[in-house]
Each structure stands twice: as C-alpha cells, then as structure tokens.
Image 1 (tube, rainbow, N blue to C red):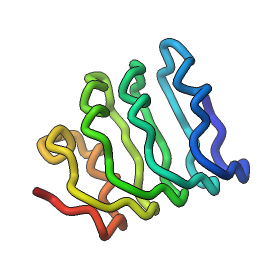
Image 2: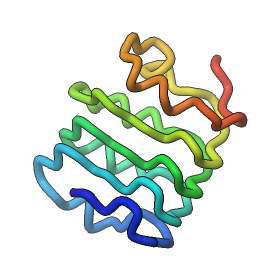
Image 3: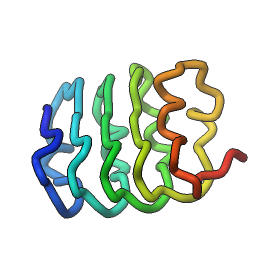
Length: 108
C-alpha cells in the first residue's frame, strides 16, 4: 500500500496489520508518530518505508521474522535504543539506510 506524502498523522493504523500478504508498505514523508508496531513482523512484507515521519522508541526484534525484507527505510525519524541484531548483521545496503540520521540508535 502506498500512502506517502499524504499528511497522515497519529500512529500507524492497526488495520494495516490485518492485511494478508502485504508486500509493500509505503508511509514515508507523513506526520506519523509513536512506536513502530511489532505486528509489522507478522506479515510477509518485502519493503517497509517509514522514513520522514516522527516515529519514536526502539526497533522491535520481532521484525527479524521478516525473512524476505529487502528495504527497511526508517531514516529521518526520532528512533532510539539498540539496533536489533538481525539488522546489525545484515549485508543488504538497503537495510542500512535506517540508521541515518537516527542519531539515538546504538550498535551493540
């Protein structure tokens, strides 16, 4: 689903977690806030684009269940805490885009 640059605000709607076989979730450049929901890890997503929002908190390790994840864009948010091991060990360049400029994230 593509909902980029639509001025969406608030948290990521839980109804998106009920979509089966969601491949692309594109919510970039909105005004979304709150934490990244753990239920994102329950779907078979390939691309998650949440950059350019006001997301806070840490990145859930449950997102490591997304074995087909290729693109995980979280840059330009207010994330904090440790970078989960599944991302720190990733060799996919696209996954590394999540770190800049989330200056509060730490590599453990």
